[in-house]
Amino acid sequence: MPIVEKHDTVFFKNRREQLVDLIKKQYPDANNGIVLLFGSFESHAVFKQERSFFYLTGIEEPATALMIDLENKKTTLFVPNYAQERAKWASSAIFAEQKERFGFDELMYLGQECKGYQCHPFFTKEQYHNLLVIIDECVKNKKPIYTLNPQTVSGYVEQRFILQRIAQLISGFNSQLIDISPLVARLRRTKSRQEIEYIYKAIDVTIDAHDAVARAISADKKEYEIQALLEYMFTVRGCSIAFPSIVASGKNGTVLHYHQNNATLQNGELVVVDIGAEYNYYCADLTRTFPVSGTFSKRQRELYMIVLETQEHIAQLAQPGMWISNKEYPEKSLIHLAHKFLDKYGYGNYFVHGIGHFLGLDVHDVGDYSQPLQPNDVITIEPGIYIPEEKIGIRIEDNYWIVEGEAICLSEDLPKAPDDIELAMANTSNEEINNEEIQEQEN
Ligand code: GLY
Ligand code: MN
Image (cartoon, rainbow, N blue to C red; front, side):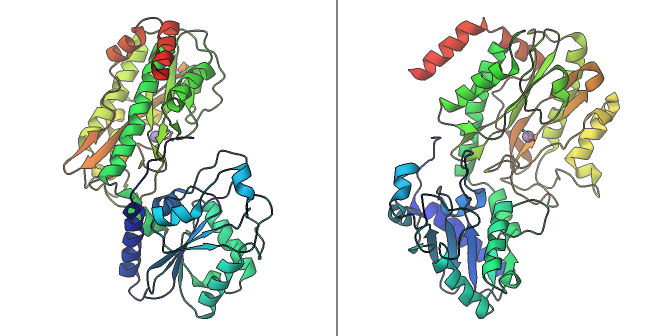
């Protein structure tokens, strides 16, 4: 079970208060109505709580719901009525303790007893009876229901599914819904010191994994052997993967989200390693490109230096007031500036993805890209050059904390100059080191 840090009651409670303040600012007549948010459901995949729900509640249990009554700011955590079954199968979540720990005013069952130990998206009317009664009352009184319901092709899909399920059970429900996803995104985008620390811990673990990777890479190994090592390095430090690990050698390195990881490393090729640990729900996202042989060829080094200089150039420019992408102001838009820089060398067309993204509870974190960078954003900067005909993919990605007047690199301890990469790889022979690494972690 990955690490989850314990927090004071006020930690999540403060966030809920900030959200209520934002809602009241945005909707001045929001003195009645409710905020209604839903956690994710469980399946046979690894359970990950919906990130905004976690951000506002701290609750890691599936099929839970949060209601805030805006008239009196009373918060209620709704939990499934599993009777005694859940403790036998999944966890012994003691909800009564969580009520105190996370600062809820009230704890209620969603409805009548569920069969078994799980609730599912097609829940029955009976299983959600108690919550439905309250919602029905709201709808009858034409009170607004503030929830996560963006009208976009993706985003909060599971939560929107739950809303649709409720709409099947309560007529008039949909017309009371007001989407607050932009407000939640605004809150989540600006990181507190504590959140920066969590991201930094995720970065620290990811740096150690990259270090082990540098020493392990050699011809004839499978990409998945490298994946196994780096994911071991995450797990042994209480972390999980923030996203599927990419270990992409040769031409695979030109496939941006390559996940097969089953090719054999070959001398003369490069290998793109794009990985991130998740610590206490917060993500890192760091990419390095290694020469399988341990030494860059002249051509590889030439291209690598262009990518590196592009990243350094963009990192120098990143600061409040610049945009990650804004075609109206190309002179202040990092993606346009990166293309302009690469164009000087003739490689603008070989950079085929965005320059970066917000980073936080999600690896591609929420945040409004139409707004310029602001203090306490955390972003990635990740230029690349991809030339399939030459079987060359190169990407360099670091994580930056935006502060007044600059971007602070949170991952500067991870080598990236070509000489330093070669040095890290040459740092003695691999098997021995990997064994030592494992021993060290075990002690
Ligand atoms: N690390 C993968 C991505 O940023 O899309
Ligand atoms: Mn990224």
